[in-house]
Image 1 (cartoon, rainbow over the protein chains, first blue to last red):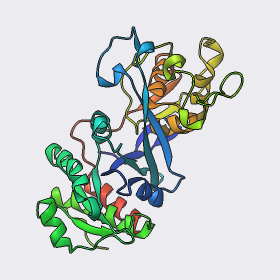
Image 2: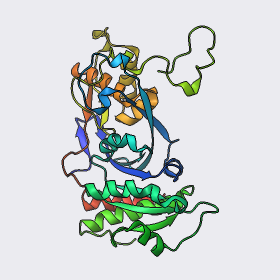
Image 3: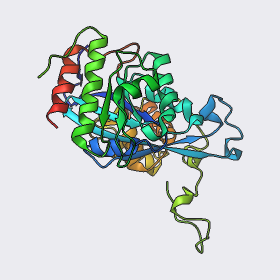
Image 4: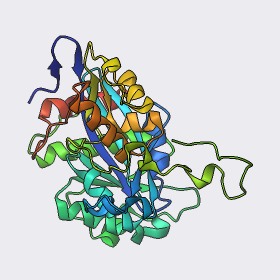
Length: 198
Length: 129
C-alpha cells in the first residue's frame, strides 16, 4: 500500500501511525508521551454521555450527566509523508470502550510497568494479548523504585517469551525512543520481516 | 468551549470545573455525525474554493475548523486546537463534509499493516531523533 495518498495536486496526505502508551495510573504514560512528542503534548477530551456507550437515543442527552476523559497525545514526524501519533490511554477501567477506538488500526502499544505496582499493568497486557495487538513492556525505572531483574519481572507478568521487555526512563527521550524502536522491530518480527539493524 | 462563568465568580466554577456550557450544545444536541465516524488520525483537508459564505448556518467553530484544515490536520489535533471534545468535533466535521467544504482522509482500514519499508522508515526516523 502506498504510504502517501495524493489529493489532486494540492496536498499530500501523510500516513499516520498510531502507537498506544498504556499502563496503570501513575506508571508514566503522560511523561513518556511528553518526552517523545515534538510538540507540546496535546490533550483531547472525549465526552462521556449515553452516546458513549452506544445508544442512538438523542432525546435526554441534555439531562445525562457528562464527564470528560482526557487523552494525551503527541506527535513524531518521521518525514513529510509519515507521522507517528502517540496516544496515552485513559487509566481507569471504566474507560475501556475508549481503548477500542484508540486501538483500532494501531501499529502496537507500549505497556509501562511500575515495579512498585506491577499488577496495575495486568489489564493492559490482557487487553493487547486478547486482541492480538503487538506490544512491548517498558519497566519504568523511577527514582527509588525497587529494582528487579528483568527475568523476575517477566515471570511476574507471565509474558510470552517473544514479547520484548525493556528497562526505560519515561522522562528521557532517548530511553523512550529505544522502547518505540523495540516495538516497531517487534511488529516487523511478528510479520516475519525483521528490520535489519542499522 | 471553555467559557467564562457568567456574572460574579462562583466559588465552584474554576478551571478545574470544566466547561460551563454543555459540550454538545454546540452541535444542537447531536452526538453522532451524520456522515460517520472519523478516526482520531483521519486527516482533514479543506476543499479549495470552498465558499463558507454560502453556508450562513455554520457556526464560528465550523469556520475555525475549515481554517485549520488549510493543511492536512488529523482529527485529534483539531480537537486539541479548538479545545473541544473529539465527539463534538466529529459532529461538526460531519456537517462540513456533508456540505463538501472539507475532505476527510480516513487512515487505511481493515487488517491494515504498514509494509516493511514503512516500518524501516519509522525505525530509522526514530533512531535519528
